Structure formats: structure tokens, C-alpha cells
Image 1 (spheres, rainbow, N blue to C red):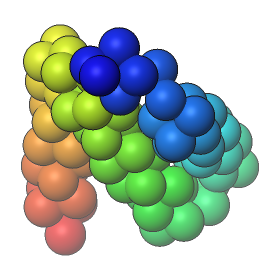
Image 2 (tube, helix red, strand yellow):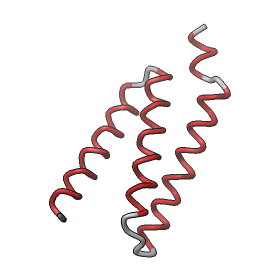
Image 3 (cartoon, rainbow, N blue to C red):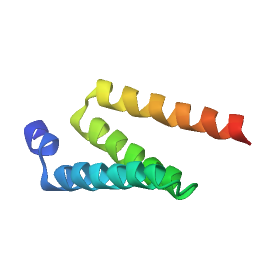
Image 4 (cartoon, rainbow, N blue to C red):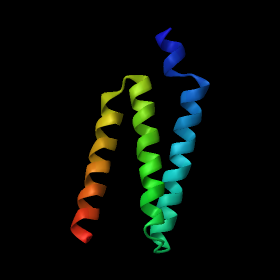
Length: 79
């Protein structure tokens, strides 16, 4: 059962969607499209956190919580 959950079609879909949205965030950043880039990154970070949770992979969850925290600190500092 766990193996099915770890590599389910739903999880793969979330993984690829989150990756594409994060790439869109990088593109938006390169074009100076703020705050749109932050929205893309937020969706991507949350998507990857869900993937980490579904895979029971704490390293994936940790890196994306840290990325979210860094993004929030950056937003607060810029305000």
C-alpha cells in the first residue's frame, strides 16, 4: 500500500505540476514580474511539500518549508 502511495499517478502529477509552476516563477523573476513570481513560487513550494508528505520524505518537506520561510522573510523585509 505504501509503495502505491509513494508512486501514485496523483503524486507524480503534483510533482510535475509543482515543478513547472516553479519554473514559471523563475521565468517571472527573470522578467521582473513581481509579485507574480512569488505566487508561482508559493504554489510550487506547496506542491512539493505535498509530494514530500505523500512520500514521507522529510528532506523534501524541510527544504520547501525553509524556502517558504525565506520567501516570507524577504517579503517582510521588503515591505
